[in-house]
Image 1 (cartoon, rainbow, N blue to C red):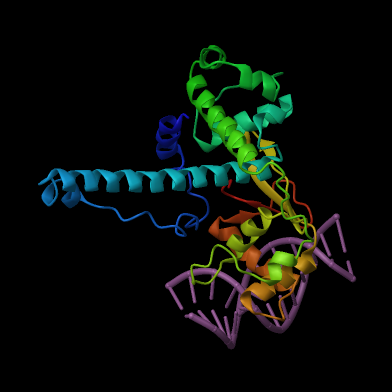
Image 2: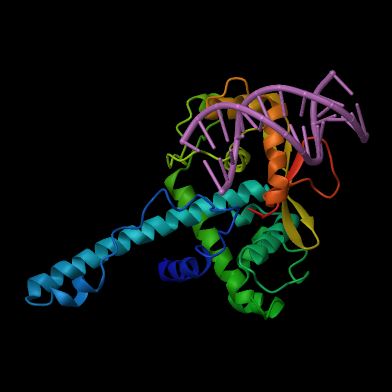
Amino acid sequence: MLYSEDITWATKGVGEPSQSGAQGGRGEAQKEPEQCPIIDSQGLGLGTEGDLQASLHLEEHSLEQVQSMVVGEVLKDIETACKLLNIAADPADWSPGNVQKWILWTEHQYRLPQIGKSFQELSGKDLCAMSEEQFCQRSPACGDILHAHLDIWKSAAWMKEKAAPGDVRYCGGDASWADSEVDSSCAGQPIHLWQFLKELLLKPTTILILKPQLISGTLSCIFKIEDSAQVARLWGIRKNRPAMNYDKLSRSIRQYYKKGIIRKPDISQRLVYQFVHPV
DNA sequence: CAACAGGATTAGT
DNA sequence: ACTAATCCTGTTG
């Protein structure tokens, strides 16, 4: 269902806005399935019918690969957004406040024109029941786009429910995954502190917590270090630096000030920092 | 006292 | 060259 819409949305939306930090290390993990250049479609093939069928089959196969990859990316993005905004994955569970957050977030992520308060007072269920026309009525500028985004969230929730009804996720204690660091971002290259912090933010832990706030219409990426000693310990483990402590770690964070990666929020508080570029 | 700011030096890549 | 580790002096709540 609505795959074609998903794909067009994804190619328009997903790739572009990942200018987070310096080199947002996200896409490197899975390489794109071999790009077969012009050769396949014209140069060699098209002799016999068998060849043609084979190449068609190949194309279909790689299309499937691309599709599942894109779906995976979309699900990951949704999961990230849920954690950042502290909202449920299923739009049907949203309160009016959640709806407001989601709209602001989507608006911000995809550089949509400002919508204002035209969706206020609507619950997630209300939102889900609305047609594209009704969306456009409330927001002529980008109602269609918002509707499409919501559709993706809806089908993602639907897929999730179908795939894992009794989904018992990692409910274990905090540091269980940390010591057996088998993390995704193992590109081999040294891990940057800011990457490590972002990683920690998106994990189910209370060592480091996000406090997404709406500041002048945009979402800021403010976080609080709840356990400085623990953060330093984990960082020391990751970098194989047993003598690491928060004093030294925070010095490294401070180095980010002039690089424009992390800063202190406007109202400076102890152990609270802010990523300059929102997610 | 622990967090914070930032200079200087060294280490590791 | 760059990032981070280490060490340090001084400030602040």
